[in-house]
Structure formats: C-alpha cells, structure tokens
Image (tube, rainbow, N blue to C red):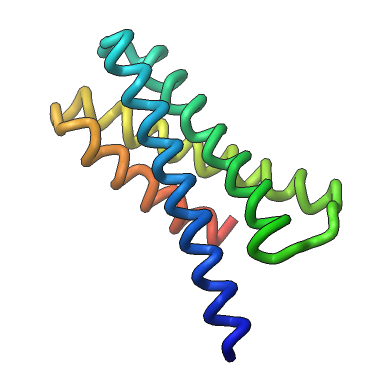
Length: 121
C-alpha cells in the first residue's frame, strides 16, 4: 500500500511537470508570435504537447515505474499520444474560432478530453 501511494505521488509530480511544460511552451509561442491562424495554433500546440509527452515518457519510465526500455511500449505510447494530440489540437483551434474562448480554458478542456479518449485507444 505504501509503495502504491509513493508511486501515485511520483506520477502526480511527473504529470504536474508535464502540464507546466505544455502550458509554458504554448504560451511562450503565443506571447512571442501571436496568431489566430489555425496552422500556427495547431503547430505550437503540437510542439508544446509533444515536449510534454516526451517528458512524461522519460520520467514515468525511469522515475515513477522504473520500467525496462521496450521499443514496442514506446511505439504504443507515441501512437496513443499522437491520437490524443489530434483531439487536443482540434478542440484548441476550433474552440478559439467557434467560441472565442480564452486559450487557457481551451487548453485545459482539450487536454482533459484527449486524455480521457486516450484511455480507450
């Protein structure tokens, strides 16, 4: 039980660092290169999301779960992350255009929906 709680704490730390990376990188791009063009919004969101995914894989495989390196596992992880990214990009870009909602709110919604969907992929 104690190990499970410690592992959950580590997982939360890694998840928090991923959220910070994702949001900081995206808002860095949006601050320096403001745009409402769908290509750039999706591109910057993809870069931020991709860096967060790589951070997640690296730290969860070494720090949280201490798993052995397995190429099949990495490919499955990246495939699932790519599907989640498409969902997150769609929600982020379409939400800005359709509803004019503040980008932070859309980022949270997109991330939550894509993570939920990834459980079923």
